[in-house]
Length: 187
Image (tube, rainbow, N blue to C red; front, side):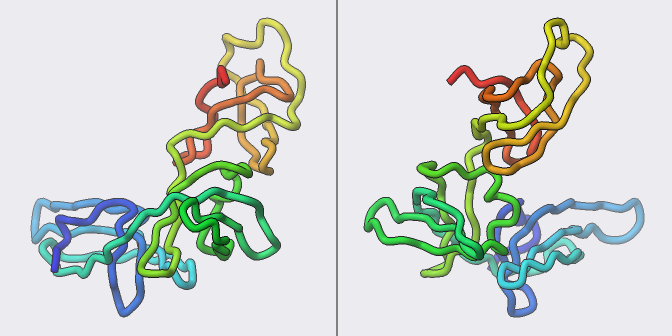
């Protein structure tokens, strides 16, 4: 059994008989009193997010998670449909597990699915994805130095702010952790 010093973002623990994913954590050492760890945990089953504080050194049970590559196929009404790259069988993942990750998925893209036994716990996206801008106001020559932003709609339905020089049909790189524009893609 491990303790609070082993907590990392994305790790899965068993807390109050529920599997919880660590979304965020912070070690706090106040000037007076003992150190503690402040965490934000997401219940994998229900999707509910809670704040929990553990005393430093508190014993925790970590769940071993296995990553398997899978190809994203399409989004159904309630499920994201993936194909196992080894067995070619389809895997249906409920939308409540995927959060807003569906906005970064393109048909044919390979991602890692995180499993606890046979149950899918999460989807691990690459750090950046390249998406095509489908709707934004036209850019004008000289709109590069101001740093101003405008709204843009991506091919997946994701809405983000982009620099003024970005046009429709441009391919742009987006950081999947923050959901923000990074740069224009050269692909």
